[in-house]
Image (tube, rainbow, N blue to C red):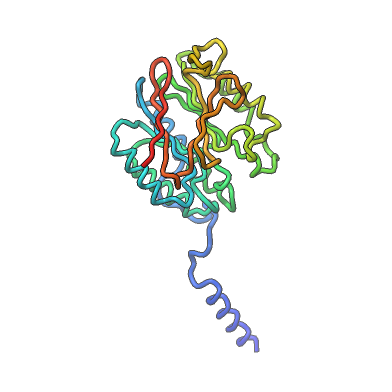
Length: 282
């Protein structure tokens, strides 16, 4: 009887799991082919590139479930010929699956230019956070491109039940205190912005306080005629719609890019004394 029992167990396994790709292996168990440690490597490339204003970067976000549109956007960015690098605002994955991150990474590689990524809330599902860390690396990091300081942050606090410092205010403060004197502009990159449901809104005002320590976002920096800062701004995704908002009514603008399914991305041009913003539909 035991042989008959084993036979039926084997049949059940074959029926329920007909192919090995139904399993999503942890990245440290199953090797992921292709590039890893991308954020740190590409940030180092950008710091060494010697870019000077004017230069341009593209901002795309929430590409999950829109691989065809993402590929078209990347092709458009590459063919323009005037964009120097890409910033991705998170939610590369929909379900946190390894293959979603690999597909997205490989499409970004088609741009043939440096790119960096911040983590989104969908990227944290299942083993997504571990996969993100393995392929892209740091979740909180910064780098300088010419006179511009880029501060890239994990802001999806809800995914951690507020059990860890997200956003990490200590990291932001220490980063602001070590920015070189040569830096005059700042860009803060995040997936979820203050007062979204994902953001830890208990620290929304302290978050604003610490990012305003950055060059280009200080009270003594030049402002535009409308009172907004000319050399510092924030970019985010998550809400799947276009918005430009002075959330705290203090001059710091948040540029919110729609999801890729809406076939839109932003292009920012950094100039000596400020920046220009362009919305691109394709």
